[in-house]
Image 1 (cartoon, rainbow, N blue to C red):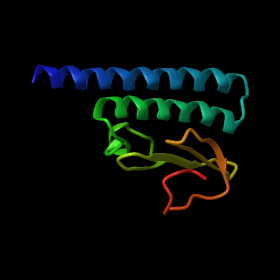
Image 2 (image 1 turned 135 degrees about the horizontal axis):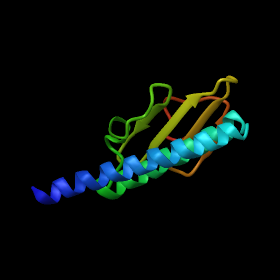
Image 3 (image 1 turned 45 degrees about the vertical axis):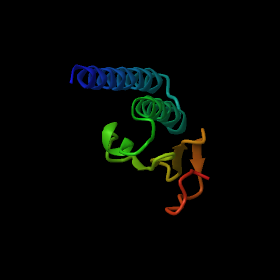
Image 4 (image 1 turned 30 degrees about the vertical axis):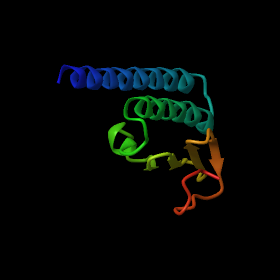
Length: 117
């Protein structure tokens, strides 16, 4: 029981740290006039880091989307060996990150695929 509590607390701490880093970078870049895409890339790198922490704890990605607390604007799909995050940017572009390491804009999202492109 203590082992599971320790595991849960480590996951919570990792998620809080990732969230703080993403928030800090987002705030700093907003002051410097960074583009919508570059800010999103940094935020999505935080989601990818959270996915890897999740996989390290549970040995797969099942349940990732429900667990990491994504904002409503970010869509997510997960399976045992894959994940994909995506959202529509204010300029209309689609932004996507996946388990294969892709992190950028795409022309469309195929609901049948597990990767961004």
